[in-house]
Image (cartoon, rainbow, N blue to C red; front, side, top):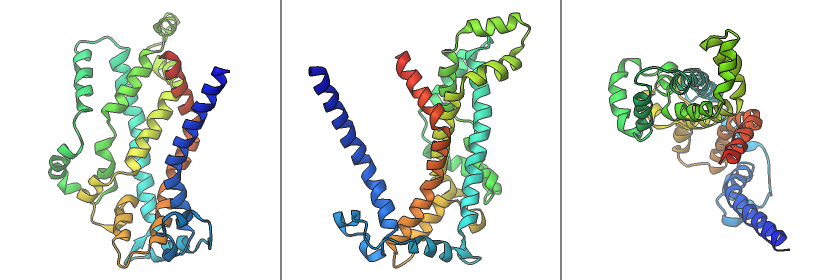
Amino acid sequence: MNRTIRRIADHTVLGLLALVFALPVLYLVIGSLKPSDQVLAGLSGFLPTNLSLHNYAAVLHSLSSDSTGHFWRFMGVSLLVAATVVAGGLVVNSMAAYALSRLEWGGRKLLFTLILLLMLIPFESVAVPLFYLFDTQRNTVWIQAAPFIANAFSVYQFHTFFQAIPVSIEEAARIDGAGPWRILFRIIYPMSKPAFASVAILTFLTQWGSFLWPVLMVDDPSVRPLPLEISVFQGQQPPDWGQILAFGVLLVLPVVVVFAFFQRWFVQGVAGSAVKE
C-alpha cells in the first residue's frame, strides 16, 4: 500500500513539473496562432480562440525580399552551420576521445586534464580574441562553425562512454588481426550510438541557439542565422507579438525534429547511464 501511494505521489510531482516546463511552450504555440492584440493577455492567452496561420504567413511574407532578407535563407544558413558543427564535431571529438581513452601514449592523461580544464572557460572570455584573430573572415558561413567543431565537453562525453566499453572486446579483435582504425569504425562506433545521439542533440541545441558569435562576426544579411535575425525582427517597431511568437515556433521546430530523430539512442544512453550508477 505504501509503495502504491509513493508511486502515485512520484508521478503526481513529475506530472506537475512536466506541466510547469510545458506551459511556456504551450503559450508560445497558442500565441503564434492568435491575433497580436490577444497574445499578451495574461492567463487568457492560453485559451485557444481565434486561431489561424496568419502570423506564420505574415512572417514569411515580411522576410521575402532582398531588402529584408529571406526567411528560408536564414533557415538554410542556420541549418548549414549547425550541421557542419555536429558532423565535424562527431568525427573530431570521437576520434580525440578514442585516442585519449583507449590508446596508450605518453602525456595523454595530462592532455585529457587540460581538455577538462577548457570546460571551465566560458566562451565569452575568448570571444573578443577570436574576433580579432578571424576578423578577415567575417561574414562567412565557415567562420560561424569552425570555432565550435572541437568541443571539450563532447570529448569528455565520448571519453566517458568509451571507457565503459569492455577492453576484452578490443583484445579479441586484435587477436583476429584488427588494427586501431578497424576497431574504431567496426566495433567502437557501432556500440556507441547512444553517445553519438547525445552529443549530436546537445551540440545541435547549443549551436542552433548561438547568438554572441554571430553578433560579432556577421553583419551581412545573406549569411545571417535565425537567432540573430529574430532579434532584428523583434526590434521592429511597433512589435507584432503574434508574428514574433510564430517566428519563435519556426525557430524551435528544427530542434524538435533533430531530437525526434535521435531520441531512441539518446534515451538508451540515459537509461544505460542510470543503470551503471
